[in-house]
Image (cartoon, rainbow, N blue to C red; front, side):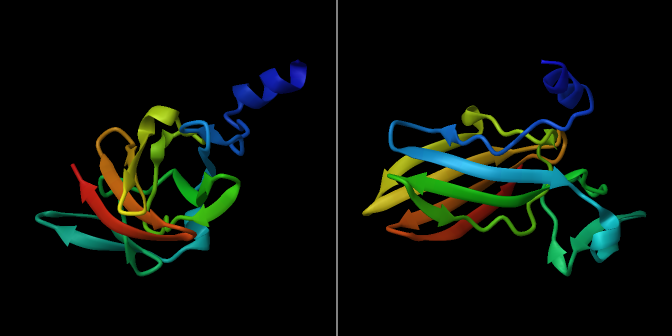
Length: 147
């Protein structure tokens, strides 16, 4: 019990426990803290100030032009024990600076022989939603929308 309290007190919560979306579908994931020294970070001029607009030469979602504190390492949809990798490139701060996701951040909808997975993520000001289309063992990210 002491170890568990120690982990929580320093924010190092385990985040590899799958989120069950229903009886046969779950999400497995890993989120880690973002280390800017391991990435190429570029700033862009935005009206009369500058903000972070590219990380590793890709656009940034979830930061509201600031340095991200967390990033997805992976996000996987598991359907009847079959793992389907989801594209998480450019997606930062999925649940503020927490390392955990919540079930209510996702919605799974049957669609044309497969599913649509909708995810809602935010660091507070940098809210965005993502849609993935899944058919059999394939997925494609079809939409990222900043709100």
